[in-house]
Image (tube, rainbow, N blue to C red; front, side, top):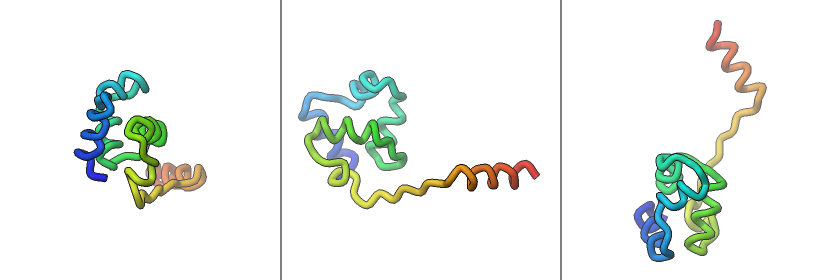
Length: 82
């Protein structure tokens, strides 16, 4: 879904992004970036999906999650320190 459509559906449900920030005790930028798809917060996504009554996958389809293992992170930090 387009970010403006997500926000519109939230408003139609009587909830603003600011209300989500207050409820979840997160920064406004976290909610904004989650809505726009720049970051992926499962907790914020789940709450927004609950508010608008759609599954997370329908709102943010085809999101690729790239995760590094702890070993990869440690190796990268080791190279950066050298």
